[in-house]
Image (cartoon, rainbow over all chains, first blue to last red):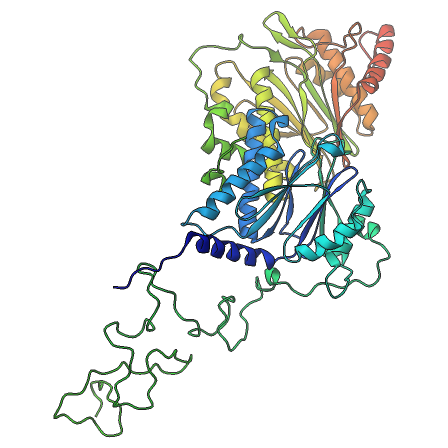
Length: 344
Length: 276
């Protein structure tokens, strides 16, 4: 028996953090920005159905990047928590700070527990007050850390490039129109060029304290956005991002076995996973009988060794035979598969 | 708020209904899950009285008087019994005031919760059916004298017009045409509206008609409060159109009520209808 590998706690946490960061970096960025009347969220999101920005409660909104099913889960849990709290106590007793705490505890517990895959998400929780000074913006990372942001914040794939652009151009106390234009320009900015994001690909929502209804969350529809973003030059849609390229694309005609693509038509190119119980690395493909040493008998030169992954579509190599008995010469020039009954 | 991890049940996909979620997570918060000892409890708590609603071209109005009674006592003279359920609907309550207000809060949360989880609002019939389910769950209490009978009205964005739904204590749901009324003074209010309602009323005309109807109800029903001129307490009126619902400001309601009272000074029984 081999000893299980020792993995230091530092390495374990680093691996989990790398895994989560990689997943988050695949998505497009979300910008949250404080303006005169509240907090603005802007994201490039071609999907009309899968929202990245949503309402949680009267004055609280939620935005996320990363894996949709995971942050949707968190969003629904937040809505349930807020509605239950508001029903049991009062609407004013639902606070963004409390919600951010609950999210932080949840994400932190999942990140550090060995049994669960870390969530590949980052979250904004924003709450507006009666004056701009009372507005709050929390940023939560995959490991449950909470940062209290001021002015603006960015998360997602190109967060640093977008944030650098915003650092230069952000103006405190801007009007809604100026804030939208500033955020959209920042999202279209990259190291190489500046892109005009089509208005229909933008998901924009605000928490607006000037709304007369108690629920301050509002989405800006495409018509309103086109009005605000008029005269920007020719629009240029983004290339398909990994987050929306795979879903619904159907199987790809690819000759390679890509572990990141569950729809490809080729298999066998990826080594099998290590044994989940013993942690042993794989020594042979699962088709080979476990007692056989991974070396072909010398009597069959030119045969594949069983450790070679079989090319798809090709017949599998015959299972290696036990060493031949003395006095019983092997059939010349022929491999010796067990003959089927009825064959001459 | 809780300082610890969100419970697993919160993260479980499933229902979009707040009531169902509450029933699984905190059933003690649901009004229908409480055991009440046998006996008639009808005189224990204040009762709300008359609610009136009428449609007009482009919307619907609902108004409620301001009185709550407990036996022969006036329990409260400025109670509010008409509440917005969501942006496009209102619910007015008659019956046991405490239970009714709790049911309205649950109904409001139910509609908002569905909207946030699903990203779309319930249809008008869907809302009316959810309210019916809440009333049905209250049947046991209703049989002990703690009945809640709401009136539900709203602007149906799909159909493009105002709609009114009435209920019975068993959760029966009935759509009404043109106008309806519930509560102890409802017979008088409905009789009054029969003579006053016309299909070509505008929003202000419909508000005037329902305020007249409430006056007639207060005239003949001791549990319905009329306009309180000394304290300036007037009915709560909500108007809902395609632009959403709003509560009519007190000064607009009092202006209409003052005009109505001035004409009733000359003819106390209100406007006379044609004989033929």
